[in-house]
Structures are given as structure tokens and as C-alpha cells.
Image 1: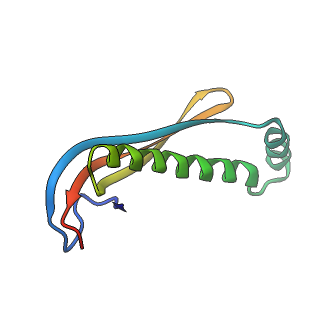
Image 2: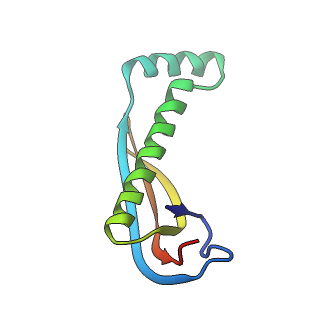
Length: 106
């Protein structure tokens, strides 16, 4: 599946615009990560535990968006975006969304 952040795919004909697709996940903080994050807040530096958690969440959200697109018969997604928000004190939501399309197979 081709995924791009642009509204078109250069050199490719869009055969059909299917519509909005999305995928998301909510990740909560782990007590071990919270302790490490607190220490990093004091001494500074990258909080690798949170970085890894958010990377996993982005991958899962994109995977779920792709599954949504496939279920609707798409073979590409244009205008893909990622968005995050805090759901509650220890949880963040990641959403991947875009427009599902059918393109001429390359």
C-alpha cells in the first residue's frame, strides 16, 4: 500500500477516491517509564522509554489505517496525517488518517 502525505502521487493516475480512513490507539504510561521520565526531567536528556512507546503507537495507528483502507478496496492513501492528544493524565491517543484511493497499479 502506497502512503503519502501529499494530495497526489506524482506520475500516478487516481482511478477512484474512496474517502476518509483512520486508525488509532491509546497508549498509557508504564510506572517504570514514569520513574525514568521523572529522573530525566531533573537531569535532562531524551526519555527513550516514552520515545519507544510513541513510535510503537504511531506504527499501530498507521497499520490500523491501512487495514481500514484495504477493507474499503483502496490500494493507496493520500494526505496522511498523524495527530496526538492527551486522553487523561497517563494516556495519549495517536490517530493516523487520510484519504483512501485506488490508483493504477504500477
